[in-house]
Length: 237
Image 1 (cartoon, rainbow, N blue to C red):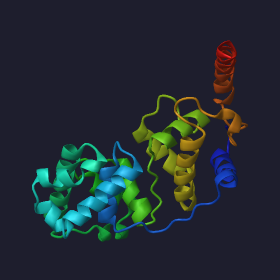
Image 2: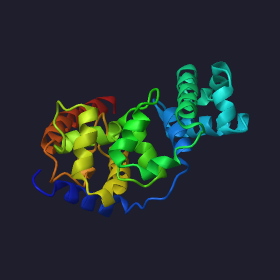
Image 3: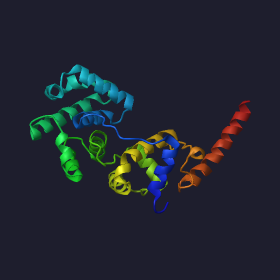
Image 4: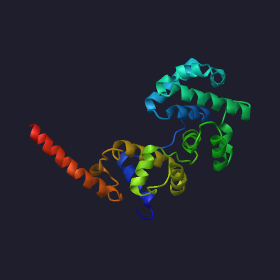
C-alpha cells in the first residue's frame, strides 16, 4: 500500500458500512470507568456491569469509599470483578487525591499529549484507555487501537508485523487526519468483526482486497481448506 492508503481505506469502508459521526458518550470520568470495565469482556457485559454499578451506589464518590468486595459484587457481570474493582477504587481515590474532586473535565483544556500523560499516571490506565476517554467523551483526536484495529492495520500493511500495540497507537494516530479518527476507529472495528476476523478472514467479501498485501496469502490458504471441506461433505453424503 502506498501513499494515501489511509484515505483509500476510509473511503472504501465508508462505502461499505456507511459514515460514522461522533456523538458525546458521557462525562470523561464515566467513560474512564466504563473503559476499565470493558477490558477483556464484551460490550454487552461491560454495559451491564456499569449499569449495575450505578444502580448500587448513589455516586462515584460512594464507589471510591466502598470496599473492593462491594464493588466486585456489583460488576461481576463484566468479568474479572475483583481485579477491576481494585483498579476502579484505586483510580477514583487517586483522582480525588490529585484533584480534590471526582471530575476530569479539565482535561479538555490541556494539550492532548499532556492530558494523556496525566491519565496514564492513574492505576491501570494505558494509552488505549486514555484515548477512549478523549475520543468518546471529549471528541479529541486520540485513536484507541484495540485488537481488531491492530489486526486489520497489520494485514493492510499500515503497521509493521513486529510493531507493538503501543507503537501502533502513535503511528496510526499520526497517519489518520484528526477529523477522521473517530470514523477510522469505528469502521476498522466493524470491519474486523464482520470480515477481517482473527480466524478465517472472509477475504472474498472484503472491500479492501485490492489494497491488502495479505489478500493473496489468505485466499491461497483458504482454497485448499475449502476443497477439503467439500470433499468431506461429499463423503458424508
